Amino acid sequence: MAAAEPAVPALPGSSGVGTGAPSGTVPVLFCFSVFARPSSVPHGAGYELLIQKFLSLYGDQIDMHRKFVVQLFAEEWGQYVDLPKGFAVSERCKVRLVPLQIQVPRAARAPGPAHLAELEGPNRYRKPRGRLGECACPKLTTLGNLTPSSTVFFCCDMQERFRPAIKYFGDIISVGQRLLQGARILGIPVIVTEQYPKGLGSTVQEIDLTGVKLVLPKTKFSMVLPEVEAALAEIPGVRSVVLFGVETHVCIQQTALELIGRGIEVHIVADATSSRSMMDRMFALERLARTGIIVTTSEAVLLQLVADKDHPKFKEIQNLIKASAPESGLLSKV
Image (cartoon, rainbow, N blue to C red; front, side, top):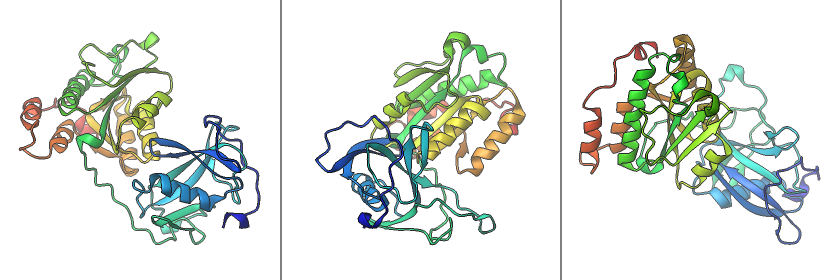
C-alpha cells in the first residue's frame, strides 16, 4: 500500500540511529511511551508501514481502543511534528506513536491531524472519517490503579533555598520523606531533580535520598530530561509516576503534562506539593485534574500500593501512616 503514496521527501530526521540497515532499507528509531527501539523500513515506506512496524514492536503494550497520532522528529524545530501528508521515508529519522487522551466535544471539533489512526487489532488500523472525534472510540476513564512493579516516584526540587518562599514547605517535606520511606519499603524506584542547585542549593537534609535511582541537576522546569527518559526506559513495565515537590504551577505542572504526553499515568500528591502562591497552586491542580491527571494524597497512594492487609509490607506501611499527614492549609486550597 505504501507504493501508492506520493514520494514526498522526509523532514530532517534524528541522527541518533545507527546505520547498518539492510540494503534498500532506511534506519528508523520507533518511540512509544518511555521506549525507543531502532529498526528499519523499506526506502519509500509510508504511514501504513510505519503503523505496522509500531504494532510489531509494541503490540503487547498498545491499547487497541485508543486513538493515536504518528509524529516525526524535525531537527529544524527541535521537536516532534505531526507526520506530513504523503510522507515517505527517504532518510534516517525518528518517529513516535502518541496516544490521544482527550475526547473533543462535538461543538468544538476541528479537523484533526492528517494521519490520525485508530488501531483495531494486532495488524490492523483505520484512518478517521475526516474529523477528530468522529471515529467510533469510547470515552476513556483513567482508573488510576497503582502497583509497585509499574510505578516510579518523582521528587521535584525540594531544595533548601525554597524553604522561606514555599507555603507550608515544612509540611510537604514531612510528607515527601514519608513517601520516600514508603518507596524504599516497597522497592519502588525514585528519581529526584534539583533546579539549578549551584544557586538554589541541594535537596533539604530532612529528605533522605538513600537508595534513590537518580539525582539530577536541571535548568529545564520539567523533570523529563533525557537522563530521566533513559532511566525510565531501563525500568520494565512503567505505567505510573507518583509526582510531588515544588512548584505546583511550574515544574510539577510541566512534568505532569510531558509525562501524560508520553502515555504515562500521573498521580500528583496534593499534601506533598506546593507553590509560593496558593492561587497558582489551586488553579494548577484544577487544570491538571481536568486533563486526566490524578490529584491524590500520600496516604491514599501508599495504601493503594499495598492494596491488602495481607501484603507482606503492610505493617511497615501502616507504621508510616499511623500519624496522619499534617493538617496544613494546603488541603483547603486544592
